View 1 (cartoon, rainbow, N blue to C red):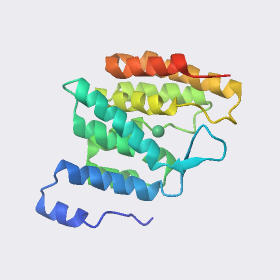
View 2 (view 1 turned 180 degrees about the horizontal axis):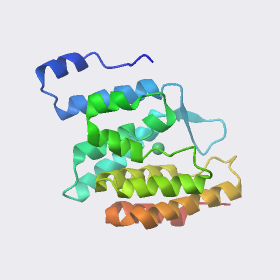
View 3 (view 1 turned 135 degrees about the horizontal axis):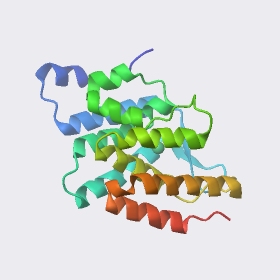
Length: 198
Ligand code: NI
């Protein structure tokens, strides 16, 4: 496949002065390119926004947790927030993630990627959660923040059953990963309580 990389990448690599804003910009541009044709639902039927809206929302949540809970590896958390859906939903390959962002980011994004060969969505989620728990705490923070954003009001074409299943899945995520971040857990708990399944 054609690998798209920002033009500054080669010079950054050559100089070995990979400052964090540049690395985050590289991840953001890579995500923008690979999610380019995807859209993200809004509560209003027929209205969607660019997929980057979701990635930005997860990054905003992650930044808030980093600001409130000292000791987190901000670089790891932010890069995995930006790239968390890139293996699951795009044709970006693992080798590119490893080369550009290193083994820890690749391992984190892989744990955040569901194995769609497993039988049911429930089994896929349980498998992913087990792999996230084997990763550094930052990866659990990204997953909590992902679901916080995903629990914005559901699209109005979703059935009640689908909304209830989604809320139940969020409760499982909260139970398994909540201990990784009290503040993210509290935000997710409130989102679950307020989630309208009617
Ligand atoms: Ni996501």
